[in-house]
Length: 104
Image (tube, rainbow, N blue to C red):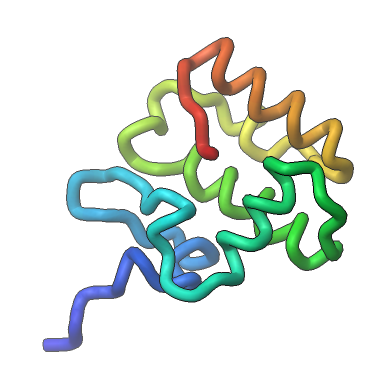
């Protein structure tokens, strides 16, 4: 029998691998520094690469699609195009205000 996928692996974001409880892995608990650097850069408004920004947005989508939240967040919200830091911040604030769900 193959090992269960590791929810702390960065691959779990793209593959949408969650904990057995249905929770997403918190960004600071992932292995390596790639996601942490992307999120910290966003939080502190420091310049980031397009790759870092895309990773941070994908992480938020991963968080929003966790099985524990699925009944709450509409798919059109999750799939909304996010192309700028301002759009990302507005998107995250909307999730906090509407559903009390904060991915960061």
